[in-house]
Length: 271
Image 1 (cartoon, rainbow, N blue to C red):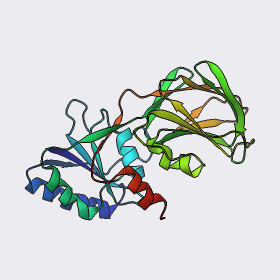
Image 2 (image 1 turned 180 degrees about the vertical axis):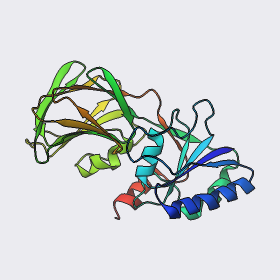
Image 3 (image 1 turned 30 degrees about the vertical axis):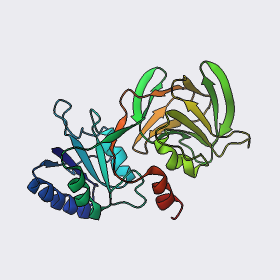
């Protein structure tokens, strides 16, 4: 099996572990490449591999941020296996001591499941894709924004808030949950819309089917930015129209024995 190992950047411990893991997997007959740690701290980020020659699997050593950045850097989506070297590490299913047993159980065959991603255009121009969420906020702290939300070309809601999170079900356990959104089964395909500190208590989270057309009109005199997965920050016009739609390529996660709802109990409820 052809495997790319991506260690957390910059983390000497993760890189040392990656070297040890590479030696172990190589001795088991796998073709291993360890990704270069020299990556700029700001976009554009270099691709992890050539689109014409992708690996069979990408093993990511780190926390959720490392996994999100690595998926952003993939020119084509391939199955991902996360090894938790972060804090909560909700997207990472394997602890370092479990990796040997995992490969002993799967041999050359493994299964994976798709995770819906969301893509965004601003005033008709594509700006990027997110696995967890997009955040719309002002550049100026403590200033509210006004949003007009249309669903299938019908004005569904108009409200003021500190910001707005558009999340996938996978991202429902991240920033959206901290902002008061529900935890969603990642197999659901939909857009979770969570206002940040809305002015009116009646402005509640919405779960919108991914086949509906979701559009957000900004009406503000203040500078605004769109932040994708906490990795890419895009300044946008204060009266921009942001269209949200299901990305063509989902992220692919290797299936382990870690049930999603057990992970919720272990990683979130007992912090």
